[in-house]
Image 1 (cartoon, rainbow, N blue to C red):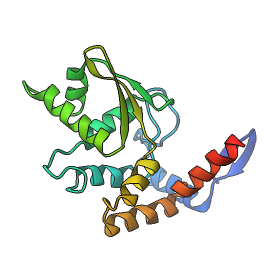
Image 2: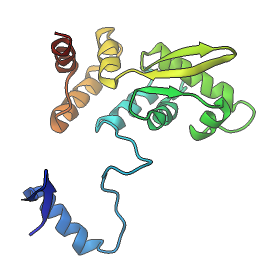
Image 3: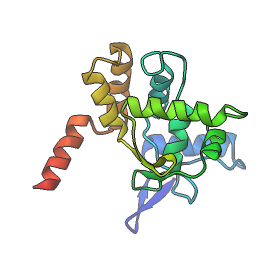
Length: 184
């Protein structure tokens, strides 16, 4: 029997979790598997992230095939819980996003502009640094705004909504209602 501890009480794992634990023990007993446990150096991400990255790479966001998904993923991984990224050297961000060579920083800047133009991030320029601070807009809000502008196709939106329901991720309306209630 597999158990977990919750608030100091030993509890039995759910049927699905227990089954996966048995599969791990049976087929990969000595492997160090990624479990998503909170560890230093890791960041939380929405379970809809693969869909979000696919939309960023699509013609609906990057019509000139200027896929900003790797730049967005780099930004997500650099925010430490406040939704704000204090940017370092653009060349370092470009390299982390997969861009090398003489045009790396310029390519990265173009992808950043796409993220800004599509509402996924807000930026603040300081001195000569165009992207000194980056605020990451909640993906649910950014996507709802694009949907309201009819920039997201029904096929993608339906897959996104279905995945959100499956993972119990809050809808835009639920998030807005929570913010409204918190302000009262």
